[in-house]
Amino acid sequence: MHRSFIVLSKNLRTIASNGVFSSSSSSLQHHFHSSSSSSPIGSPTRVQKLIASQSDPLLAKEIFDYASLQPNFRHNYSTYLILILKFGRSKHFSLLDDLLRRLKSESQPITPTLFSYLIKIYGEANLPDKALNTFYTMLQFNIRPLTKHLNRILEILVSRRNYVRPAFDLFKDAHRHGVAPDTRSYNILMRAFCLNGDISIAYTLFNKMFKRDVVPDIESYRILMQALCRKSQVNGAVDLLEDMLNKGFVPDSLTYTTLLNSLCRKKKLREAYKLLCRMKVKGCNPDIVHYNTVILGFCREGRARDACKVIDDMRANGCLPNLVSYRTLVNGLCHLGMFDEARQYVEEMLSKGFSPHFAVIHALVNGFCNVGRVEEACGVLTSSLDHGEAPHKDTWMIVVPQICEVEEEDVRIGGVLEEVLKIEIKGDTRIVDAGIGLEDYLIRKIRAKASQF
Image (spheres, rainbow, N blue to C red):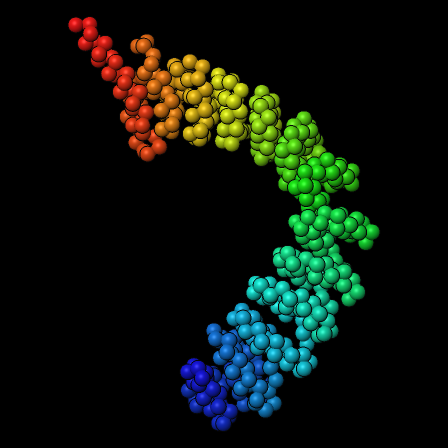
């Protein structure tokens, strides 16, 4: 037996046997003896506080049992609720079940709050069967479950794939017990069936909402749109969007993101751009995510010029390009050999304080070197270094040998190397691996000068 309980039980027995306290314990006597209670251990409220103060649920149970044995004593509903929560949180579920049966037998007035707690406890304990049974336990206590109880149980069930069907059965059974599913109830099941690939069942549920005077919301439409897009049925998703708009709904940002991403992946770039332009008219101002989605779509398909137009549209709409916008566009321009345009955007992003990924600088430097424009490649490196951005070693390995092969003295190798020496040398930025080309160049210069004498 717990030492702390022995001490408490001795105190309780002393109270029960003496019926009075010493003069020094008059305040305690006030707590244990209520004018409305004839029990020698005090009022139910006092015992409730004592049980609530115990961190050990088993000790709390012993106090509960001891008090129950006292004549003329009856625990209040709050005490049951406190002890049930203690058992649930400590995963003493058999004790919890026993206490529920006892609560039912004593005909205590019970509120739906108890079952809200139970559903939460069973969900956190990964006990979907017990969560499901709680719905029917409420009926046994002559308490009609609320829609919020149904929804919470459905969420617990559908989070496990093999409980989607039991969730659907509960959903259908709820009407028979006077519980009316709401929009959220339908959305929970629609999402579960869509994730399981059963879009047809989700569509059936969606259509039943209208027949039962349940109004779908934006999430209802988005759930179906996302499912259709995952199945590459983007045309069906666009049709749903039109249905939404016709019924007066204003699609939210995430709905448009889903559609734009799917249209771009299906290479329907014209439709994606038209949808982007329609957004503001339809009440949803495009944000940076929407613009970047279309920019990426154009660049993937080798249409970086069109992506530049999207950048212009962004600015006109008060949405400024971010790091992702610039990186995506520069890479797209480099793939098309549009190095001068790419350089302009690199300089723009550097001037705005954005740090280009080393791959952006590498792509531009490599592009200039491939077309023999070594000086422009050096200019990109110099601009990058001026802004504290050190190119990757692979970039140095491309540009240094190119520089070394140029005989004109006006190429800015000296200035570039001076800038390199000013920055912190790191594993990925050092030019040691690229030094072979520089070494060969210097050796050739020395030999050339020696042969003049």
